Image 1 (tube, rainbow, N blue to C red):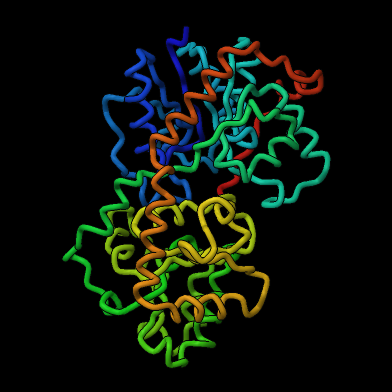
Image 2 (image 1 turned 180 degrees about the vertical axis):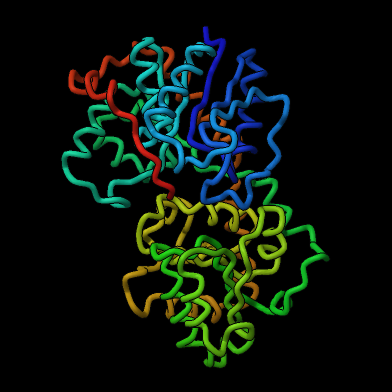
Length: 405
């Protein structure tokens, strides 16, 4: 009988507090104690929104409250996680990716204690090409993992490659609080006053780094901005990052007139931008394992224009129904998709937004809870995986490392 479950990760920011609150309530209804073990207390790429409201009644443990993950030695982090798991003594452990200290420590502890471990991840083989020997090592470590929670069947092939059988794969990790973002369609925030809010605009939300391909989006918009069909349209970036200044310079004379830059906003403050936008666009080139901003926009009732390189494109975007998928490697693809969208009637764009709402309805926090619970139940009911002989050896030395995404 499962009495205690612990979930371990490098940090639980942005989308995680609402997920964990719902999972805590879900498990409490089953009489199960739930422990949250967070290694780092500060400094993730999403630290601008880290005060998302942790429920004080939850058993939430931060091992390094005042340190960012990049400042914590991986070996020390693994040691602290193992000590904490010894103290909690859970029946099942849920852990972040094995590439991180959280997953490495949890897999090691469970192998030693002969307890089931469930790992959640959304990485795909194509997102981060690796040398063959790195994949071989990962396969050995994965041989000790009892079940995986991944986003959707679009990611099956990656985890089949790493040695999992279909019955070990469960879905639901990439869910957001749909009810929260649905407010965007209903609640007007009178405190936000932007010159572009009363006109149609494309919304581009995310860190301004190379893999997001914002510069190609900006250049595409500049090339077509003077066409009559785009006369009243703007392009709005929300975020910041290492390419921010480059983007501002590239915007040139359109900056502040047709192209607008807004700093990072907390989720609550994004609602008004989602409420007023005409569509979200995400033109990523690589490394976009899913693209949770697409979930946010769809839950807010927006059409979505999404690069085929984004992990969610096959699952959430139905081409011509709730948006469009495009090839970000094609120099004119973004131009064409912007023109295609603005050429639609306002009625058709509203229908696309409603389709987004309908599609994303199954991707709320209940999906997350049931996916986690199904994986835990399976792992607990099955015989603990012994793993390969190399895996049994490697796990004693494997500490992972922190690589913010």
